[in-house]
Image (cartoon, rainbow, N blue to C red; front, side, top):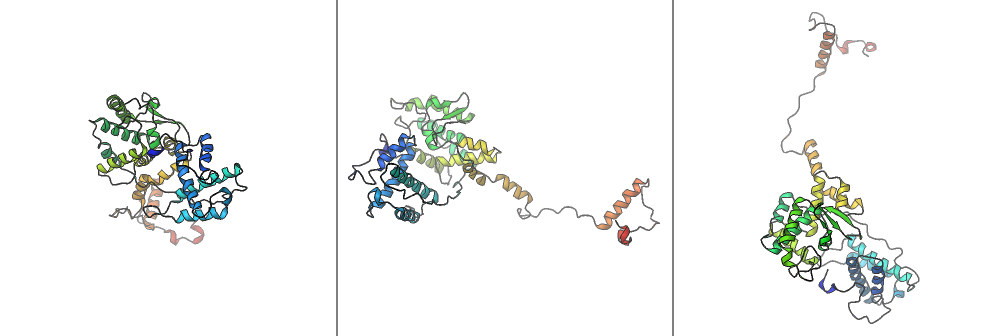
Length: 376
Protein backbone atom coordinates (compact mmCIF):
# COMPACT_ATOMS: atom_id res chain seq x y z
CA UNK A 1 0.00 0.00 0.00
CA UNK A 2 1.57 3.36 -1.02
CA UNK A 3 2.67 5.59 1.81
CA UNK A 4 0.40 8.49 0.91
CA UNK A 5 -2.63 6.31 1.62
CA UNK A 6 -1.81 5.74 5.27
CA UNK A 7 -4.27 7.37 7.63
CA UNK A 8 -6.73 8.16 4.84
CA UNK A 9 -9.83 6.25 3.85
CA UNK A 10 -10.14 5.29 0.17
CA UNK A 11 -13.47 7.12 0.19
CA UNK A 12 -11.74 10.43 0.92
CA UNK A 13 -10.83 12.41 -2.22
CA UNK A 14 -7.12 12.95 -2.80
CA UNK A 15 -7.61 16.45 -4.21
CA UNK A 16 -10.25 19.14 -4.51
CA UNK A 17 -13.05 18.27 -6.91
CA UNK A 18 -14.22 21.08 -9.19
CA UNK A 19 -17.53 19.52 -10.30
CA UNK A 20 -19.39 18.00 -7.34
CA UNK A 21 -21.83 16.26 -9.69
CA UNK A 22 -19.23 14.87 -12.06
CA UNK A 23 -18.21 11.25 -12.51
CA UNK A 24 -14.90 11.84 -10.75
CA UNK A 25 -16.54 13.45 -7.71
CA UNK A 26 -19.05 10.63 -7.31
CA UNK A 27 -16.30 8.03 -6.83
CA UNK A 28 -15.88 8.99 -3.16
CA UNK A 29 -19.55 8.52 -2.13
CA UNK A 30 -19.60 5.29 -4.11
CA UNK A 31 -16.56 3.96 -2.23
CA UNK A 32 -18.04 5.18 1.08
CA UNK A 33 -21.15 3.14 0.28
CA UNK A 34 -19.00 0.07 -0.39
CA UNK A 35 -16.93 0.68 2.74
CA UNK A 36 -20.09 0.77 4.85
CA UNK A 37 -20.85 -2.70 3.50
CA UNK A 38 -17.56 -4.07 4.79
CA UNK A 39 -15.64 -4.20 1.52
CA UNK A 40 -11.91 -4.71 1.90
CA UNK A 41 -9.94 -1.48 2.33
CA UNK A 42 -7.13 -2.75 0.11
CA UNK A 43 -9.68 -3.68 -2.53
CA UNK A 44 -11.29 -0.24 -2.33
CA UNK A 45 -7.94 1.43 -2.97
CA UNK A 46 -7.55 -0.63 -6.13
CA UNK A 47 -11.13 0.17 -7.12
CA UNK A 48 -10.49 3.91 -6.68
CA UNK A 49 -7.48 3.73 -9.00
CA UNK A 50 -9.49 1.85 -11.65
CA UNK A 51 -12.45 4.24 -11.44
CA UNK A 52 -10.27 7.34 -11.56
CA UNK A 53 -8.56 5.99 -14.66
CA UNK A 54 -11.97 5.38 -16.28
CA UNK A 55 -13.32 8.82 -15.36
CA UNK A 56 -10.20 10.58 -16.66
CA UNK A 57 -10.52 8.64 -19.92
CA UNK A 58 -14.16 9.75 -20.16
CA UNK A 59 -13.32 13.37 -19.32
CA UNK A 60 -10.75 13.51 -22.13
CA UNK A 61 -13.63 12.70 -24.50
CA UNK A 62 -16.09 15.20 -23.07
CA UNK A 63 -17.94 12.68 -20.89
CA UNK A 64 -18.04 14.28 -17.44
CA UNK A 65 -21.42 13.52 -15.86
CA UNK A 66 -23.41 10.32 -15.29
CA UNK A 67 -26.09 11.05 -17.95
CA UNK A 68 -23.31 11.15 -20.55
CA UNK A 69 -22.61 7.46 -20.02
CA UNK A 70 -24.05 4.91 -22.44
CA UNK A 71 -23.33 1.44 -23.72
CA UNK A 72 -21.09 2.73 -26.49
CA UNK A 73 -18.84 4.47 -23.97
CA UNK A 74 -18.46 1.27 -21.97
CA UNK A 75 -17.70 -0.78 -25.09
CA UNK A 76 -15.11 1.73 -26.31
CA UNK A 77 -13.39 1.75 -22.92
CA UNK A 78 -13.32 -2.04 -22.85
CA UNK A 79 -11.62 -2.01 -26.25
CA UNK A 80 -9.20 0.65 -25.00
CA UNK A 81 -7.97 -1.32 -21.97
CA UNK A 82 -7.70 -4.51 -24.03
CA UNK A 83 -5.23 -2.75 -26.34
CA UNK A 84 -3.40 -0.49 -23.89
CA UNK A 85 0.12 -1.75 -23.14
CA UNK A 86 1.70 -1.66 -19.71
CA UNK A 87 5.07 -0.10 -18.92
CA UNK A 88 6.84 -3.29 -19.97
CA UNK A 89 5.04 -3.36 -23.31
CA UNK A 90 2.80 -6.30 -22.42
CA UNK A 91 -0.98 -6.05 -22.65
CA UNK A 92 -3.17 -6.27 -19.57
CA UNK A 93 -4.11 -9.82 -18.71
CA UNK A 94 -7.77 -10.83 -19.13
CA UNK A 95 -7.99 -11.14 -15.35
CA UNK A 96 -6.79 -7.55 -14.82
CA UNK A 97 -9.13 -6.29 -17.52
CA UNK A 98 -12.00 -8.11 -15.84
CA UNK A 99 -11.27 -6.51 -12.45
CA UNK A 100 -11.26 -3.03 -13.97
CA UNK A 101 -14.51 -3.66 -15.83
CA UNK A 102 -16.17 -5.13 -12.75
CA UNK A 103 -15.35 -1.95 -10.81
CA UNK A 104 -17.00 0.11 -13.56
CA UNK A 105 -20.04 -2.16 -13.68
CA UNK A 106 -20.47 -1.85 -9.90
CA UNK A 107 -20.13 1.93 -10.19
CA UNK A 108 -22.80 2.10 -12.90
CA UNK A 109 -25.21 -0.02 -10.85
CA UNK A 110 -24.68 2.34 -7.92
CA UNK A 111 -25.43 5.34 -10.15
CA UNK A 112 -28.74 3.70 -11.09
CA UNK A 113 -29.46 2.94 -7.46
CA UNK A 114 -28.90 6.59 -6.54
CA UNK A 115 -31.16 7.62 -9.45
CA UNK A 116 -28.37 9.56 -11.09
CA UNK A 117 -28.96 7.72 -14.37
CA UNK A 118 -32.08 6.02 -15.69
CA UNK A 119 -30.56 2.79 -16.93
CA UNK A 120 -27.38 0.79 -16.42
CA UNK A 121 -25.04 1.30 -19.41
CA UNK A 122 -22.91 -1.67 -18.28
CA UNK A 123 -25.83 -4.08 -17.90
CA UNK A 124 -24.83 -6.07 -21.01
CA UNK A 125 -21.10 -5.89 -20.40
CA UNK A 126 -19.33 -9.14 -21.30
CA UNK A 127 -16.14 -9.73 -19.34
CA UNK A 128 -13.03 -11.21 -20.98
CA UNK A 129 -12.79 -14.95 -20.77
CA UNK A 130 -10.67 -15.75 -17.75
CA UNK A 131 -7.50 -17.67 -18.42
CA UNK A 132 -6.11 -20.34 -16.13
CA UNK A 133 -2.54 -19.25 -15.58
CA UNK A 134 0.05 -21.34 -13.79
CA UNK A 135 2.35 -19.81 -11.17
CA UNK A 136 5.38 -18.22 -12.82
CA UNK A 137 7.88 -20.29 -10.86
CA UNK A 138 8.16 -22.86 -8.09
CA UNK A 139 11.21 -23.42 -5.91
CA UNK A 140 12.83 -26.76 -5.33
CA UNK A 141 13.53 -27.95 -1.79
CA UNK A 142 17.23 -27.23 -2.28
CA UNK A 143 16.48 -23.67 -3.49
CA UNK A 144 14.14 -22.87 -0.62
CA UNK A 145 16.71 -24.05 1.91
CA UNK A 146 19.33 -21.78 0.34
CA UNK A 147 16.96 -18.81 0.59
CA UNK A 148 16.13 -19.56 4.22
CA UNK A 149 19.84 -19.59 5.06
CA UNK A 150 20.56 -16.12 3.63
CA UNK A 151 19.51 -13.81 6.54
CA UNK A 152 22.21 -12.99 9.10
CA UNK A 153 20.47 -14.17 12.26
CA UNK A 154 23.01 -12.49 14.54
CA UNK A 155 21.25 -9.13 13.95
CA UNK A 156 17.71 -8.21 15.04
CA UNK A 157 16.54 -7.57 11.47
CA UNK A 158 18.28 -10.66 10.16
CA UNK A 159 16.57 -12.84 12.75
CA UNK A 160 13.26 -11.17 11.90
CA UNK A 161 13.81 -11.88 8.20
CA UNK A 162 14.52 -15.55 8.89
CA UNK A 163 11.33 -15.83 10.95
CA UNK A 164 9.35 -14.14 8.16
CA UNK A 165 10.68 -16.53 5.51
CA UNK A 166 10.04 -19.55 7.70
CA UNK A 167 6.48 -18.39 8.40
CA UNK A 168 5.65 -17.72 4.75
CA UNK A 169 7.07 -21.09 3.69
CA UNK A 170 5.48 -23.12 6.49
CA UNK A 171 2.00 -21.59 6.40
CA UNK A 172 1.63 -20.45 2.76
CA UNK A 173 -0.23 -17.38 3.97
CA UNK A 174 -0.58 -14.27 1.83
CA UNK A 175 1.64 -11.21 2.18
CA UNK A 176 -1.15 -9.09 3.65
CA UNK A 177 -2.07 -11.84 6.10
CA UNK A 178 1.48 -11.98 7.44
CA UNK A 179 1.71 -8.19 7.75
CA UNK A 180 -1.52 -8.01 9.74
CA UNK A 181 -0.59 -10.78 12.18
CA UNK A 182 -0.99 -9.75 15.81
CA UNK A 183 0.55 -11.32 18.86
CA UNK A 184 -2.88 -12.57 19.89
CA UNK A 185 -3.10 -14.51 16.63
CA UNK A 186 -0.15 -16.73 17.54
CA UNK A 187 -1.19 -19.98 19.19
CA UNK A 188 2.22 -21.57 19.06
CA UNK A 189 1.46 -24.00 21.86
CA UNK A 190 -1.12 -25.58 19.56
CA UNK A 191 1.13 -25.15 16.53
CA UNK A 192 -1.32 -22.90 14.66
CA UNK A 193 -1.71 -19.29 13.58
CA UNK A 194 -5.05 -17.54 13.43
CA UNK A 195 -5.70 -15.55 10.25
CA UNK A 196 -8.18 -12.79 11.02
CA UNK A 197 -10.15 -11.22 8.19
CA UNK A 198 -8.16 -12.76 5.38
CA UNK A 199 -9.14 -12.47 1.75
CA UNK A 200 -12.91 -12.26 1.48
CA UNK A 201 -13.12 -11.20 5.16
CA UNK A 202 -12.79 -14.82 6.24
CA UNK A 203 -11.06 -16.20 9.33
CA UNK A 204 -9.16 -19.47 9.38
CA UNK A 205 -6.49 -21.39 11.28
CA UNK A 206 -3.29 -22.58 9.59
CA UNK A 207 -0.66 -24.98 10.96
CA UNK A 208 2.78 -23.44 11.39
CA UNK A 209 5.08 -26.42 11.87
CA UNK A 210 7.76 -27.08 14.48
CA UNK A 211 10.66 -25.43 12.66
CA UNK A 212 8.84 -22.20 11.89
CA UNK A 213 7.51 -22.16 15.45
CA UNK A 214 11.05 -22.34 16.80
CA UNK A 215 12.19 -19.40 14.66
CA UNK A 216 9.15 -17.30 15.59
CA UNK A 217 9.76 -17.95 19.28
CA UNK A 218 13.43 -17.00 18.90
CA UNK A 219 12.47 -13.80 17.08
CA UNK A 220 9.88 -12.86 19.72
CA UNK A 221 12.40 -13.47 22.49
CA UNK A 222 15.61 -12.02 21.04
CA UNK A 223 14.71 -9.60 18.26
CA UNK A 224 11.26 -8.08 18.61
CA UNK A 225 11.95 -6.44 22.01
CA UNK A 226 14.81 -4.52 20.36
CA UNK A 227 12.55 -3.30 17.54
CA UNK A 228 9.47 -2.54 19.64
CA UNK A 229 8.37 1.07 20.26
CA UNK A 230 5.29 2.76 21.66
CA UNK A 231 3.85 2.74 18.11
CA UNK A 232 4.30 -0.99 17.62
CA UNK A 233 0.86 -1.86 18.96
CA UNK A 234 0.68 -5.68 18.78
CA UNK A 235 1.99 -6.41 15.29
CA UNK A 236 4.14 -9.55 15.20
CA UNK A 237 6.69 -8.50 12.61
CA UNK A 238 8.07 -4.97 13.01
CA UNK A 239 10.11 -2.70 10.78
CA UNK A 240 13.35 -1.02 11.82
CA UNK A 241 11.19 1.90 13.03
CA UNK A 242 9.14 -0.37 15.23
CA UNK A 243 5.92 -0.24 13.19
CA UNK A 244 4.09 -2.66 10.92
CA UNK A 245 6.13 -3.52 7.82
CA UNK A 246 4.98 -1.94 4.56
CA UNK A 247 3.72 -4.34 1.89
CA UNK A 248 6.02 -3.09 -0.88
CA UNK A 249 9.04 -3.35 1.44
CA UNK A 250 8.26 -6.98 2.27
CA UNK A 251 8.00 -7.86 -1.42
CA UNK A 252 11.36 -6.22 -2.13
CA UNK A 253 12.90 -7.95 0.89
CA UNK A 254 11.86 -11.46 -0.17
CA UNK A 255 12.93 -10.79 -3.77
CA UNK A 256 16.34 -9.52 -2.60
CA UNK A 257 16.94 -12.52 -0.35
CA UNK A 258 15.95 -14.84 -3.21
CA UNK A 259 18.53 -13.28 -5.54
CA UNK A 260 21.18 -13.32 -2.82
CA UNK A 261 20.64 -17.07 -2.57
CA UNK A 262 21.51 -17.38 -6.24
CA UNK A 263 17.95 -18.28 -7.24
CA UNK A 264 16.93 -16.53 -10.43
CA UNK A 265 13.17 -17.01 -10.31
CA UNK A 266 10.55 -14.25 -10.36
CA UNK A 267 8.21 -13.61 -7.50
CA UNK A 268 8.23 -12.35 -3.94
CA UNK A 269 6.09 -13.59 -1.06
CA UNK A 270 3.80 -15.46 -3.44
CA UNK A 271 6.75 -17.52 -4.66
CA UNK A 272 6.96 -19.12 -1.21
CA UNK A 273 3.19 -19.61 -1.17
CA UNK A 274 3.23 -21.35 -4.55
CA UNK A 275 6.17 -23.49 -3.48
CA UNK A 276 4.52 -24.65 -0.26
CA UNK A 277 1.31 -25.63 -2.03
CA UNK A 278 3.10 -27.46 -4.85
CA UNK A 279 5.46 -29.38 -2.59
CA UNK A 280 2.58 -30.46 -0.35
CA UNK A 281 0.65 -31.84 -3.32
CA UNK A 282 3.75 -33.65 -4.55
CA UNK A 283 4.12 -35.09 -1.05
CA UNK A 284 0.66 -36.62 -1.28
CA UNK A 285 -1.53 -34.01 0.42
CA UNK A 286 -5.22 -34.06 -0.44
CA UNK A 287 -6.15 -31.04 -2.54
CA UNK A 288 -8.98 -30.07 -0.19
CA UNK A 289 -6.56 -29.74 2.72
CA UNK A 290 -4.34 -27.55 0.56
CA UNK A 291 -7.41 -25.48 -0.32
CA UNK A 292 -8.10 -24.93 3.38
CA UNK A 293 -4.48 -24.01 4.04
CA UNK A 294 -4.40 -21.44 1.24
CA UNK A 295 -7.79 -19.98 2.12
CA UNK A 296 -9.28 -20.47 -1.34
CA UNK A 297 -13.05 -20.11 -1.54
CA UNK A 298 -13.21 -22.14 -4.77
CA UNK A 299 -11.51 -25.49 -5.26
CA UNK A 300 -10.88 -24.55 -8.90
CA UNK A 301 -8.37 -21.96 -7.72
CA UNK A 302 -6.41 -24.60 -5.84
CA UNK A 303 -6.54 -27.01 -8.78
CA UNK A 304 -4.07 -24.75 -10.59
CA UNK A 305 -1.38 -26.25 -8.37
CA UNK A 306 -2.20 -29.75 -9.55
CA UNK A 307 -0.99 -28.65 -12.99
CA UNK A 308 2.30 -27.54 -11.47
CA UNK A 309 2.73 -30.59 -9.27
CA UNK A 310 3.58 -33.12 -12.00
CA UNK A 311 5.95 -35.26 -9.94
CA UNK A 312 3.62 -38.27 -9.97
CA UNK A 313 2.77 -37.80 -13.63
CA UNK A 314 6.47 -37.75 -14.49
CA UNK A 315 7.02 -40.96 -12.52
CA UNK A 316 4.23 -42.75 -14.39
CA UNK A 317 5.46 -41.37 -17.72
CA UNK A 318 9.02 -42.52 -17.05
CA UNK A 319 7.88 -45.99 -15.99
CA UNK A 320 5.45 -46.64 -18.86
CA UNK A 321 6.39 -44.58 -21.91
CA UNK A 322 8.75 -46.58 -24.19
CA UNK A 323 10.51 -43.42 -25.37
CA UNK A 324 11.01 -41.81 -21.97
CA UNK A 325 14.49 -43.28 -21.42
CA UNK A 326 17.65 -42.72 -23.42
CA UNK A 327 18.41 -46.45 -23.30
CA UNK A 328 15.90 -49.03 -24.43
CA UNK A 329 14.65 -51.37 -21.79
CA UNK A 330 15.65 -55.02 -22.11
CA UNK A 331 12.95 -56.95 -23.86
CA UNK A 332 11.20 -59.57 -21.83
CA UNK A 333 11.14 -63.26 -22.78
CA UNK A 334 9.58 -64.10 -26.14
CA UNK A 335 6.03 -65.48 -25.90
CA UNK A 336 5.79 -69.27 -26.49
CA UNK A 337 5.01 -70.49 -29.97
CA UNK A 338 1.85 -72.38 -30.83
CA UNK A 339 3.69 -75.69 -30.97
CA UNK A 340 5.22 -75.12 -27.55
CA UNK A 341 1.80 -74.33 -26.09
CA UNK A 342 0.30 -77.53 -27.55
CA UNK A 343 3.20 -79.57 -26.21
CA UNK A 344 2.74 -78.09 -22.76
CA UNK A 345 -0.97 -78.95 -22.85
CA UNK A 346 -0.24 -82.54 -23.84
CA UNK A 347 2.30 -82.89 -21.06
CA UNK A 348 -0.23 -81.55 -18.56
CA UNK A 349 -2.87 -84.03 -19.75
CA UNK A 350 -0.38 -86.88 -19.54
CA UNK A 351 0.57 -85.89 -16.02
CA UNK A 352 -3.08 -85.94 -14.95
CA UNK A 353 -3.43 -89.47 -16.36
CA UNK A 354 -0.52 -90.72 -14.27
CA UNK A 355 2.25 -90.69 -16.80
CA UNK A 356 5.25 -88.43 -16.44
CA UNK A 357 6.21 -88.34 -20.11
CA UNK A 358 4.51 -88.82 -23.46
CA UNK A 359 4.95 -92.03 -25.45
CA UNK A 360 7.10 -91.07 -28.36
CA UNK A 361 6.00 -94.16 -30.34
CA UNK A 362 2.43 -92.81 -30.67
CA UNK A 363 1.92 -90.08 -33.23
CA UNK A 364 0.78 -86.71 -31.86
CA UNK A 365 -2.38 -85.30 -33.33
CA UNK A 366 -2.14 -81.57 -33.96
CA UNK A 367 -5.16 -79.33 -33.69
CA UNK A 368 -4.97 -78.38 -37.36
CA UNK A 369 -5.24 -82.04 -38.39
CA UNK A 370 -8.57 -82.61 -36.64
CA UNK A 371 -11.80 -82.44 -38.63
CA UNK A 372 -13.43 -79.01 -38.38
CA UNK A 373 -16.48 -80.35 -36.53
CA UNK A 374 -14.31 -81.79 -33.76
CA UNK A 375 -11.97 -78.88 -33.10
CA UNK A 376 -14.33 -77.23 -30.63
